[in-house]
Image 1 (spheres, rainbow, N blue to C red):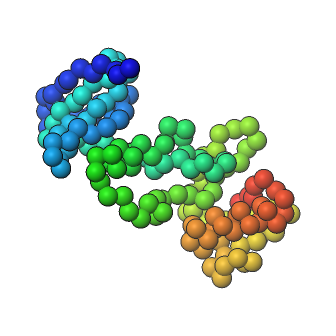
Image 2 (image 1 turned 90 degrees about the vertical axis):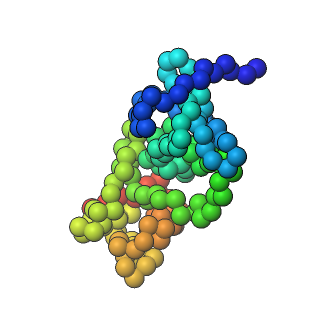
Length: 164
């Protein structure tokens, strides 16, 4: 069963649409000529314009305890791929390895600026553990910090580490 879509033409060169999600690009040869959009009201519609643009979040990872919202699913990358874009170096999508852990509460980002200002990652025993994994310790790159956190959680049997 296919959804019925109304067709809309943009009235101005720039238009922000709140509570809307682009689901696909409408292609004219190798150029985007519009987008299929799902809006809160009236529902599905096709919006035609010279250069449709969408603001996308980085995809939510399936790593337990990540801090991305549930709606960050990587749809923008998938939409671009379906339209024929070449997807490359996706392993470099930005991520943050640290989030606040409060039992039963959603996670939110703890900026790496905390490490830059002298905060230390500590394990469940209060030990500053990053010296075990990298010479830059808590100032190590994100990927090293992420792997070190996971290694430390496995080593100590803890579901999280903490900053101090």
